[in-house]
Image 1 (tube, rainbow, N blue to C red):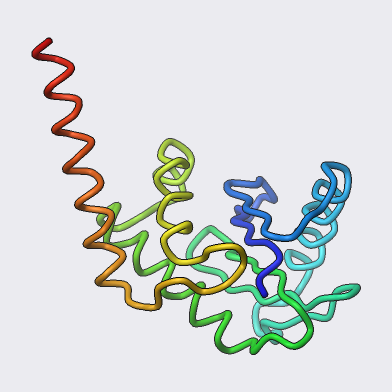
Image 2 (cartoon, rainbow, N blue to C red; image 1 turned 90 degrees about the vertical axis):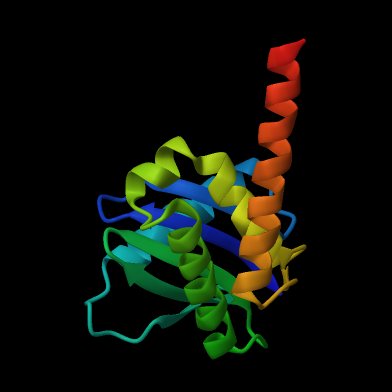
Length: 152
């Protein structure tokens, strides 16, 4: 099970956080702080897996962002990295060459994309094409509703 997913900039700024395990607010903040510091202190050529307390941290850096997932000890690390990679690919297709600013100003859409991939800490849909199609349909429905509101 995926316990949490974090998107952190190279400067250590949290851009997106989604927790699937039941943590108190203080525990969430402490985990974010500790995991971010640990991942950012690692060398670029170091392994992308780290043992952390009762879980494992899997992370990958894309451009100026770290995509970090905290998972159970029994979870397959390569599958988690593949899930993170597919999430990045979906963001890239959806935002048409995603950048950090897209995640800052469109964080609700970035969370929506993540929710299409992961549900309750488990991979819901592995197909990037199916997720992109669902997102485009949702955008079309939203645009139609906005047009109806504008007419009335």
